[in-house]
Amino acid sequence: MYPGDFDGDEDVDLDDHALFADCMAGPGEPPAPSLTSVSNCLTAFDFNEDDDVDAADFLVLQTAFTVD
Image 1 (cartoon, rainbow, N blue to C red):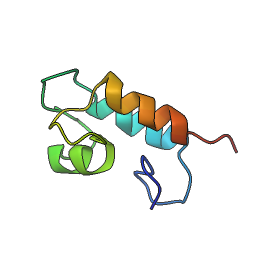
Image 2 (cartoon, rainbow, N blue to C red):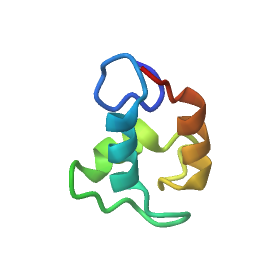
Image 3 (cartoon, rainbow, N blue to C red):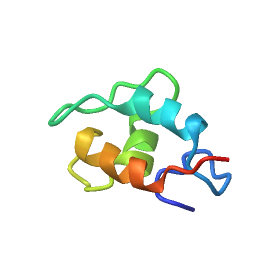
């Protein structure tokens, strides 16, 4: 699995970005997703393991983003 590949299709694309956006809450704020669970958000997108999904994690997602 690639970092940020939430749906496991071996790329990081707009589908994964949509889920990231649903998980993103900001620094120090736990995710409050409507499309998945908090646990799934943190597992897939909390790259620096600080219990939030924020701009620091988005930087990693941007680096992994692919265009197909």
